[in-house]
Length: 380
Ligand SMILES: C[S@@+](CC[C@H](N)C(=O)[O-])C[C@H]1O[C@@H](n2cnc3c(N)ncnc32)[C@H](O)[C@@H]1O
Image (cartoon, rainbow, N blue to C red; front, side, top):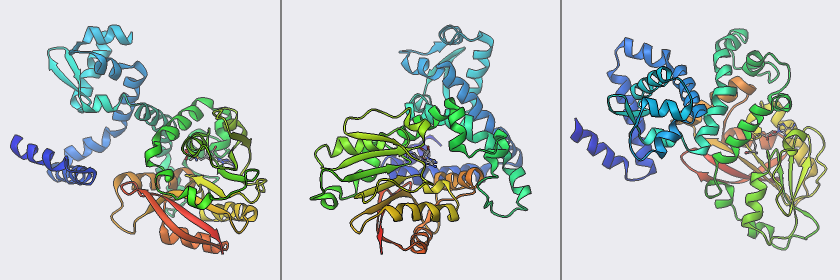
């Protein structure tokens, strides 16, 4: 068995693609070995894993194990986290059972690769976001689908979000009264895509922006959160002429980064776009939050502000027609239940653009494994 596993490890280390292929193959192998009882307990206790990992993050438990130069005893972990020794002992026993830490002796525990992964800032922020905001909505999916008669939800005002949080507000307006959730949301989205894996790594910005007048808007990031993409743009192209503008709802702009050369502007994207004739209008992960009729409305609003030289950059997942991976399929289902929305194939994007008189000129994929791409869209 060890020899077989070693061979798989070697094979997986070849490239990102072989690593992912190995994960899929091993998960399929695990499923094929399961008894009904195994399957029951795998699905039955899934939520418990997220909940206990969230507790570990809140206690800083994983950090203490990672920072320690040798295995820690239950009492040492209890001492550092200020939690009760019995609780810590049971948590560590559970973490060991699910492979989140390793037991290295009686009452002694050490970090492994998963423990280290759980101390990455993006992972901490992501777990907080998924556990706090998304998991309660997953719980409401059966109710939602009962209500739609098991048809695809199409009403963005009546989703699992509304059931879970007992509100009639849309999630982004609701954030204004729920700043903790907003902070986790922004932290996760800001950290999720680092500069080397964004549109800036593939798109010919300098060629397209050559000769752009200094007093004209060059780059408008609509629904840009707290401004990380504007900051990345300014950092990569400090000498390009033209205004760089972040637009988002007032409560997000109030928290926005202060980046020299970036104008932070409160703007509701359902209102007419006041920045007219910009070179680039960039919307990342904005349209995937909306059903097709709303996307069309938002596209119309941007189109009305575009001049012939303007380019709309739609930065989204572009789903393959088949064999979509687990991560992307999960995000698509999350869009379905949270927003009555979806992740789209290139054909679905094209149709939306053409419906409003825009054309897709080219799709640049910057993260092939997550299908994340920037689409260059222009006036017909
Ligand atoms: C999924 S987030 C994407 C954030 C950012 N573009 C990114 O990729 O990290 C969607 C963003 O759209 C903003 N948004 C939602 N509704 C909006 C509206 N009506 N007007 C302006 N911005 C809005 C949200 O505040 C949020 O920052």
